[in-house]
Structures are given as C-alpha cells and as structure tokens.
Amino acid sequence: MKENIHPKYQETVVKCGCGNSFTTRSTRKEIVVDVCNVCHPFYSGKERFLDSGGRIEKFKNKFAGNYASLTKKKKK
Image (cartoon, rainbow, N blue to C red):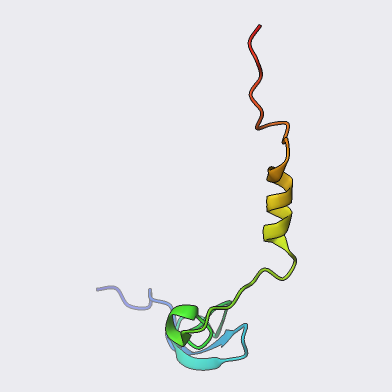
C-alpha cells in the first residue's frame, strides 16, 4: 500500500441552515448543509413549508388558464 496518497482526515464542523452545528470527521474543515437531523421533517416530526414566495400559487395560476404551449393544434 502506498503511503502519503490519502487526504488529511480531520475534525469537521457541520453547520445547518437552522442554526444547529455538530462535529464529525472528514477531509474538509467545515461543511454547510441546508437540512440536518434537527430540522428535517422525518426526524423532527414537524412539517415545515418552504413556500415563502407563493411559488405553488404562481404555478397554479400559470397553468390554470389556456397556456399556449399546452394547447393542441387542430390539423387542417
């Protein structure tokens, strides 16, 4: 087995968007994640909606009417 070919394995701080942080070991010094075990709905048991800008309503309004690219053209 060759020596000195593996990256340095060190303690790593993992930071979540919810403010939670914990330490583990990795080849990087810091890891930033969007969802962790504290804020994930599966582990926390609380559902969190991320629709802050009304994206669902915008999508429904866009495709509710006669959208030009979805209409079928009649053959002559």
